[in-house]
Length: 125
Image 1 (cartoon, one colour):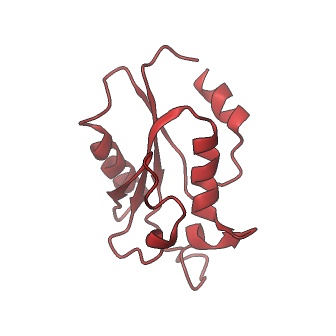
Image 2: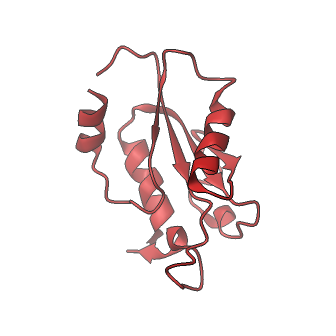
């Protein structure tokens, strides 16, 4: 592992899934009873590496309140943006007052729930 004091994660999740043409954003589609976004958050939390996970969501998001992580103490919400890069920037802005200059921030797409803990650990090391 690196010698950073802390690790943080930002999950840009403000997309509406327009290309997918589903009746809801793809991050809220269910896989084995859990939303794609909840699986993604679960995978990051299970590493026990992250101080906080920031989820950048659209201001019009009608689904987050149903997430099993909506009130988790290590998961905070940030406003999303028009583009993924805007959502990442907003997530980073949420961390600016609480992260130190030698900390690391990892960004992981909301719609990629199959990331493995071991892969995250390898990436960090």
